[in-house]
Amino acid sequence: MAPPLDAFQSESRSAPAVVLPWRLPAVLVTAVVLFAAVAVLRFAYDDPNAQIAPFFLVPIALLGVEFGLRGGILGGLAATLTVVTWVVVRDVPFGPGEVAARCGFLVLLGTFFGVLGARLSTAVADRAQVAAQGLYLDGLTAHGMVRLGPDGVITGWNRGASEMLGYSEREILSRPLALIFDDGDAGSTSSEMIAATARTGLSDEERWIVAKDGRRRWAAVSVTRLGGGPDAEFALVLRDLTVKNANRHESSRMWEVSFEMLATARFDGYFQQVNPRWEEVLGWSVEELLARPSAEFIHPDDRVKTAAEMAKLVRSGHGTVSFENRYRCRDGSYRWLLWNSMASADDELIYAAAHDITDRKRREAVLKATEARLSTLSEDLEVRVERRTAELGAANKELEAFSYSVSHDLRAPLRAIDGYSQAVLEDYADEIPEAGRADLGRVRAASQRMSTMIDEMLALSRVGRRELRVEPVDLTAEAHEVVAELRTQDPTRKVDVDIGVGLEVMGDPVLLRLVLHNLIENAWKFTGRTEHARVGLARTSSDGGRSTFVVRDNGAGFDMRYADKLFRPFERLHRQDDFEGTGVGLTTVVRILNRHDGMLWAEGTPGEGAAFFFELPDKQEPHA
Image 1 (spheres, rainbow, N blue to C red):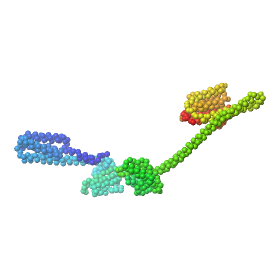
Image 2: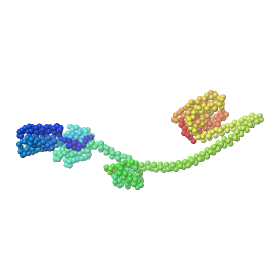
Image 3: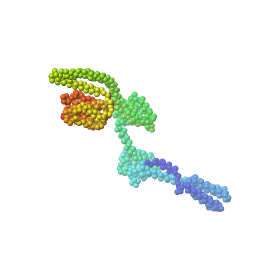
């Protein structure tokens, strides 16, 4: 970017004008040496009329030309001092009048050369300034400088004009100004602009100019008359506004198409400009919005806080962010607006953008009402939960009482039935027919089976009430203990058992042992009629924080069509005569696994064995 022309002008005025090609110290030394030489010669000659005095002209002229009026007068005084000294020292027979005449002549001579030097210095400075201005104007690239003759013909062309329009100076000189003007556009023609400048001295306008390649550029054109009279020339300055004009049009288009409500407002509370979005949202025309104070459109309840916000905005100059108020629509309704704004003290305007948040406010109101309703429902629910908890506690107590009754009150009759049946068989065995003895045996078996079922039911109820104690459980070790117990109970059985190593989980050790006991005992039982029986426990997968285990056997198996009956209490897929059981064990396993956030499923084929899979999370949270 070129410095301003005033800088060049002030610099050229302040710089000393050098007339002689020497440096100033050299000029001064030369003048002093010349004065000294002439003085020595003056004192060396005894003849008072010796023609030495004219030699004073050389240093006097040198000082006057280089230092101006002060230098010339100083040189004349120095010469006068030399003459007076020479007259006094040598006692020259000059009268006072002649001495005064000689001294006056020297002073006048110094003054003459000083004035001459000042004129020469001014002329040199003016030429330097003109040359600097010429170099400056020629070097401008942001502005095109064109010199025109009286008839509008181009006589000068700087580099900025060449870069802007593409013509070299050789191509454009002596061509008419109309070459770069598009006289078909609206505005003054080239001849009209020249004529107007000739009358007024200055002409300014924005218009299209045409480059060498035919492209048009929007430019600010200023024409100034140089001098007066019919032969006066003109200076034309071009400033390219193409980008600025495009930005202005782009800003105007953005103002028109913005979804936001854009506005500028004066400090007196009136809108200065609003975009069409205002009319779309509020229904007021632009003219109506500009004609009335903005406070008239604001909801009465929001006017005080809006006025305070505007006062703070104007006073501080800082922006306002996320300020909300309500504006009245043409139909009498109100809409909520969210404002972002800032104030400019220079032009006393507030620049603002508003966003219609009415729908959001309605949703917030609905949400607030919903939250209040949910809060009420939550409180009601808490009351109901407390009541149901109390009822559940009472039911648990009733269940405990029932369990106690089953455990004590029902066992006694069963023990009596079993005991008396056994006594009859022992005391009257010889008198009872074979069929009677068989019937008594079935009575004893039924009572014993019912006692076992009672035990299973009590165990099942205790599973649901027992509090979990979560800790690491070694399923491998627990499984080996279960197998050892089964081998002790049935030492004649030969079963090939394969238990995996490192089977560790987190859970309640007592309940998980019960899971293994039920599953392994089932496998042991249903392989009772299988030659080369095999039972195994293994981990099948460990992924996503959960591990899956399986208990397999090669026993009786089951039909998958009836797999859902396996986990129902007292449901059995095999006859009691074939395999003993109550049908409660797997139900107990399901309940235990549910409390551990686990699950159980089974696969089987009749005569080929069964596989019971159970899944447990690797980490357990304590459950009630």
